[in-house]
Figure 1: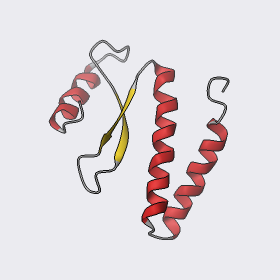
Figure 2: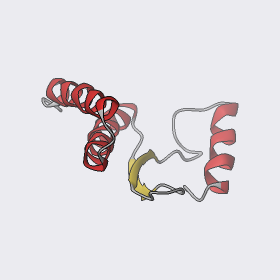
Figure 3: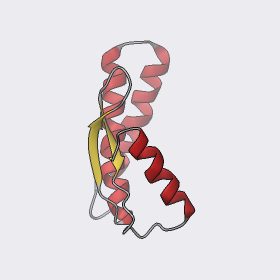
Length: 94
C-alpha cells in the first residue's frame, strides 16, 4: 500500500473496465482493460521479487501483455517452475 498507493483505484478501474467489456465489444474498452491489468501485474509480481516484462502476445491481436520473468534462480521453486519455463520457451515468451 505504501509503495503503490494507486492499488485501490487501479482495482476499481479494472472492475469498471471489465464491466464495460461485458456490455459491448469496443476495441478501446478491451485495450484499456489489458493496460490496467498489465499495470496490476507490474505491481503484484515485484512484491514476490519477480520482475515483469511486456511482450506482444503470440496470437492476434498481438498487443503487449505483461509476463513475469521466471528464471531458475527465482525463489519460486518446485516442479511447476520447470514446466512453466518449458512452456514459455516453446511459446517464445522467454
